[in-house]
Image (cartoon, rainbow, N blue to C red):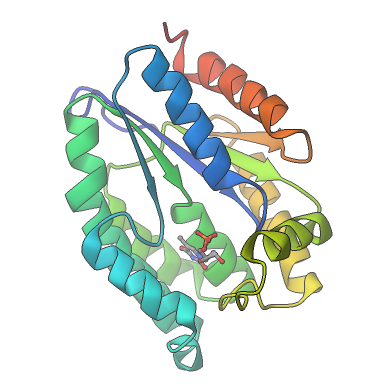
Length: 219
Ligand code: TMP
């Protein structure tokens, strides 16, 4: 179900997918395109996107909360999402801006739900608490073989250590890919799968075509 666009005239686009799929690059390229047409566009990310949520990002990705288990991590992601939605996403949508968000609720469903085996009822109620009617109008699932994504992510961070989730093994990352594809299949009216193995400019063109198709011609 899409959100009430009279209460929030802006459009909410999320990018999802495994590690190294190029989500942040594509979020930037999409925002450039929207801004070049004169639209206000807020680019943001999860976990993060507001000062308090960025502080929680540090805690979660450092791995200090990992021993508490995936349910506790879900609570932390949810806390970060509540503040992000209230302080950043909803104000932008209410003033009519585009919001392009690098990861959102589907990441919780896949990382903590499908892979972390957190009870789906807990995932659903946390999602409801955090987002209410702040649902994406369009979700772009950037799809890539896990091995390719991990190699890209390793090249990008150079000598820095992998974060809490990137450090998991190949089977885990293959599971993530399946999880995102399963969501896209179950919710075709919201999601569009994009081949992230193409050159960045071709991925950007495919994303732009999906945005035009799903949200109407933007000029
Ligand atoms: P990234 O933004 O650099 O991809 O890092 C965020 C990491 O956090 C990534 O490994 C996915 C993970 N994550 C979750 O496990 N659950 C979530 O709800 C979100 C938003 C991210």
